Image (tube, rainbow, N blue to C red; front, side):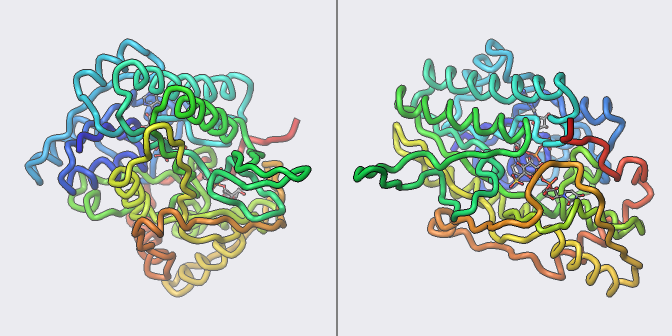
Length: 383
Ligand code: NAD
Ligand code: USQ
């Protein structure tokens, strides 16, 4: 299949583009490289030294003989997007190309507006381009488990059947997102659902949990193919951050009581889930939602697992319960369904001591690149 990976220079997108290329798909990457620009602006850097996208792709071609076409530009620019789509002629579009950090979106009004305009306009442009010229193309859009928030009932996959005053219907599951970023994903989901209902487009919303890990078969083939691994207080996510903190002898930063429970998955499962979604496209007019995570953990549990693995490696690992910079429930019910992808054949890589060990060792290898001033959270949700 011809698959265009939008956001293919980023953490999930780079791993996915190489994986799909390795599996025989014709892959294109479209990316504005804005994430590299935001890193510069915030003075943060990935733990790993990532090569420029052109060098990455040249190396991939040298090693595998496979070519990945590159389109550098911004999907909020409709003319650019249309030209790129016409040139590439995708059967499927995998859309990772958004501002994805909750703290970034909560810095101030400007960053909230930037996040929502970038994400909502970009996705709307894709929908309009599909409606006009590519109505059979399958959109595989990265959403987030955070769209649902933490309701006191089980979380279904996208829809819930409700009986009300003697009548019954299956309706979109209620959304209670916890940041301006997570809200942008809810807005996207509504727009995509509308485009499927009204224009008959086909789409799969992958409500992904927090991703951890750095190595996939392909990104591990060569130093120039290395993936990004964020550890800073803005873009770093829970488990990845904890491993890097442990590796450099920084106390693990659990926010508040640490009872916040989320869905998690290994990056090796991210790439496989996207492959499964592409191989089993949604029907015309269908807005399909998959909850894309393999296990649930709370952050205090993760911190303890990292402490145990770090201690076994001879590290001295402390856990610090910081005042929570976010406004969120710190003890709550959380039980989310995730059977759709398993039914399609996903065989999860569950979190293991071996994975934490390998992340810790990875972090130890690159520890001299860590800027300790970028670890503590600086953005608060409070007024
Ligand atoms: P990332 O920041 O590493 O990558 C995103 C890429 O998209 C970057 O390369 C960036 O330059 C590009 N991009 C952003 N806006 C663009 C635009 N307007 N036009 C073109 N390119 C643009 O993020 P990631 O961690 O790889 O996340 C990818 C997607 O997966 C996001 O949509 C995110 O919401 C979702 N997701 C990520 C995680 C996670 O833990 N990382 C978890 C759940 C969902
Ligand atoms: N947390 C800590 N300590 C830290 C970092 C985070 O306790 O050092 C806590 C947060 O308070 C939160 C939880 O861990 O309760 C998750 O935070 P996170 O930063 O790991 O993830 P989040 O902000 O939710 O965002 C990440 C990605 C985002 C994706 C989302 C999936 O950046 O793109 O959408 O995970 S989910 O969480 O399922 O919505």
